[in-house]
Image 1 (cartoon, rainbow, N blue to C red):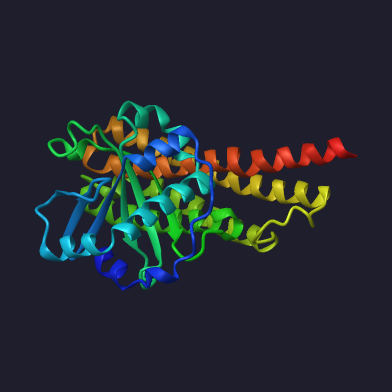
Image 2 (cartoon, rainbow, N blue to C red):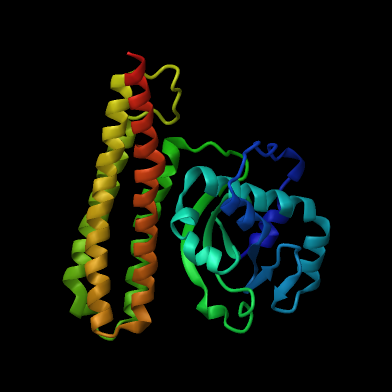
Amino acid sequence: MNEVEELSKLDTQSLPPLRTILLDDLHQNVLKNLFLELGSGPVLYLLSPSYTVMNPTPSEAINDFISKNENFLDYLRESIVQNLAVYSVFLDVNSYFIEQNNCLVLARLRERDSGGRRYEIKFYTHSARDLLTQYKDKIYIGRDFIDLFHFKRKYLGVKDLIVSLKEQYEVLLDKAEEKLKNPLEYKSFFQEIKESVNELRNESLLALQSLPPYFDFNKLKGDDLIDINAQYRTINHYMIELNDEVAEFENLLRNNKETNFVRYVTKYKKDMANAISYFNIRINGYLTTKIYNLKDKL
């Protein structure tokens, strides 16, 4: 965990200006109540929206970092929420739990070997009252990937989602060896999921190669939009197939009381459910609306 050190290296003056985005009430409230979790060596620091270190006792280094970078931390928090607003829907689909917790959301950053530029972020929600005393009861709501220097995402961020699911499957295998009572008992399930993950990755990356990395709707014709929509829908179908297999595996683990391992499978399934919702709402839903609007102009 080296997020504090990596963020400290950034030339914050060279960061692009934040976009002007009108956030809805949910995203505005999450921005207001967004906690950050930043690692420094073996320690994960929890920062309140006003940048008080909630846990553990702050070191001189983290206090110094915060005092010198409050404006940058404001930028970071707003950039995170703007990315969520444009490139995900999991705040929306988890809004019941988030609003039950008065929109308190925790963003845990993990730097991705990029010199402080790119991050994977895991998001949780928790009640403010029990945040410190019952921290382990936090609810996982999703993950996102941001590039602080490049807001616009190739292929609407789909490639990052696909690659992440492949990487997470490898993590699941490691956790299985550590947490399952008898990993070999579930060999057939892991094999089926592996085949489905590989099919999702291979077919999706092949499909993306035929699509424009960025959309210019002024240049796309109706037939182009229909084909693009169909390609993204096909990727979503592979995602749905994988999700169904993982859900079956999760149910078996719960029935077998594999409590030490099943929570990792549940998080994996949550990421797939979020991705499916993203396809349905942001990608295929948006493209379908564009197609219908073109038809109305004929």
